[in-house]
Image 1: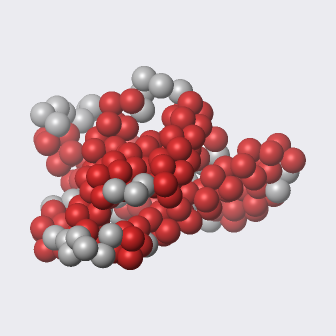
Image 2 (image 1 turned 180 degrees about the vertical axis):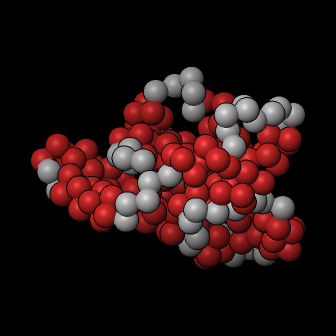
Length: 202
């Protein structure tokens, strides 16, 4: 499983934004030209190395000022009002993701007669994550962010409750699958929702 992922990562170019921050303008152009070629399009004529250099900010003090301003804004009442609940959502979601790794182990304790239940449960969990991620890509631009987060959390709570009452392997599989399925809506939306609320200056 790791080997195909590593091979796939070898073909992924470096982030143009990172290269731009390091003033590696020629490399930025190489990456962007490759992206344009892969998408069967062309870069606009004004997008070139000379333009990138002219638009770059050379003043190093800007970075320090930007960091100070970001930190000061972080602890304002307005930011904390949004950041507090968002942090709680991130924490509980990360905690739940960690706890889910124990489901196959607990399944073996409750259904010791099924020798393959650990493997089956892990496969069901992985399937829920995969299908949930695919489904979220279709929903993300059609349904509001808050509805996805709230709906995903409520659905995950229901599935977790059903998981606790599952007394058959099939009930365990169904609850595990939908728990991971709905959790992907929360995770995917959080990765979009967080930078949308806290946009960078640059």
